[in-house]
Image (cartoon, rainbow, N blue to C red; front, side):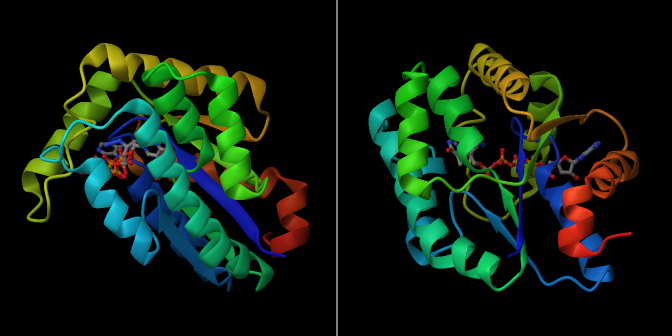
Length: 218
Ligand code: Z5A
């Protein structure tokens, strides 16, 4: 069986940067690594991603938004994540179930219990072995995210960045509250330097005996 790791946090907290570094870290240890992003990772998921993230689309109802994220996730879990895990791969996902609780639950105000049930239904109960919550002030993350968006030549995926600061603060509080309830969620301060954040993540992985057994990481 492989190893399933997820990264979570507000916009611009540095997930993509840290996932790239962690992927290289595992590969240097001889592991086969698959890195993915949500929404996305399948043909269906990438199409729906365009609907969800491009602000030129018509306004999306909160419940409709929830179903779209869960549809992407169901496709990704059954077609990509479960097969990769059964081949023994390390699967690292940029966002997963906790994003839906934080954004659609705490951010949009949908009932948390219903969101959790939808997550369980879409994933068939798949839970990551560990989740890194990269935590920083929304002002810090949004500044980084806008710089990245402005520098990008691809489609302008800025629907969430345009939400007001109160929304982003609610999402952050949602994540922190989840981390207090779920021991698998490890909070990492994302305001520091990129190499030191990477070092902290590797330390957490290496200290987990479960990982030592599964992945021969020394
Ligand atoms: N969403 C949802 O509502 N419900 C769900 O169930 C799911 C998602 C699954 C996905 O957007 C959106 O969907 C997301 C939530 C919602 N909201 N938004 N937007 P996305 O995947 O396009 O965006 P994102 O997940 O927020 O990623 P991001 O903005 O690309 O941020 P990131 O991956 O966390 O950060 P990064 O790309 O690694 O870094 C951003 C910039 O900061 C970049 O220039 C880096 O070089 C720089 N950086 C990174 N780390 C540092 C440090 N430590 N110091 C200084 N600069 C840094």
